[in-house]
Length: 166
Image (tube, rainbow, N blue to C red):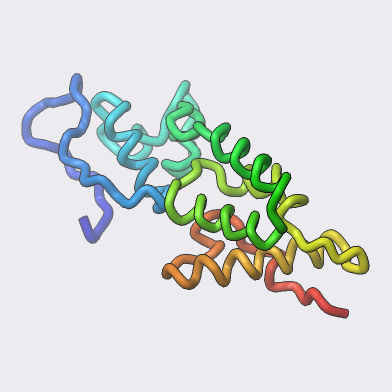
């Protein structure tokens, strides 16, 4: 387990799926993807087999799980963020976004951000879009850090390190 090597079983179980994978916390996307792939791929003999779908080898298990459409149920989060944006402030919308990241494990957090960033940013008209995004991401990162997480774990790293004030 610590060496992350693929260990073959002594019996030939190539026609069956793995049954000895522990359930990770859903917010750990890569481990969740490994578990889902292990339950859906029959007879893999290597990590490469596990990440292969339709003769394409994906660089990560997360990308392979998304290609197999095992981690794509995002409509409920889109609907929620659209609804809350209609009657709450951007601060409350960011709190809800952070809560979704922490407790609901959306499959594509980056796509969720890209779809809803306009409703999650501050209304300051003197700021540029990049400054608004940086401010919102900094606030979301602060909320995540209170729970021992950060934006890097949700594929949202980047712009929040930029200065928001000129």
